Image (cartoon, rainbow, N blue to C red; front, side, top):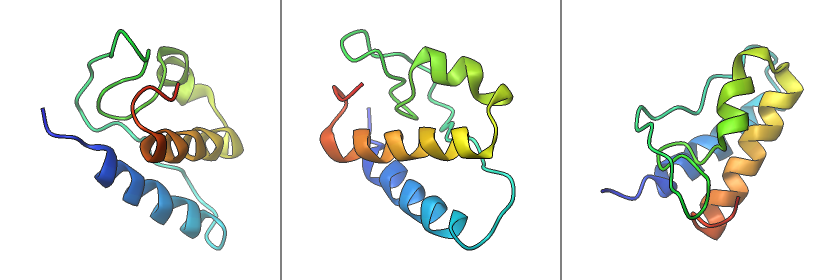
Length: 82
């Protein structure tokens, strides 16, 4: 499977930079590759935990941005960074 971390990292950086100057909705990080990695506990597509995925629709803007920040860190550090 193609490593989606570089694309996800770029998206996270763009979204987080834009969020500082432009308020508004925060889009989902879903990459339509909904498959969990047993070792890391992260989705192989979006690098979110099951808890983050399940809670997404109930999160406010600040919480969603915090998830994106964790995704950015995970994408930089590799798939085992849960």
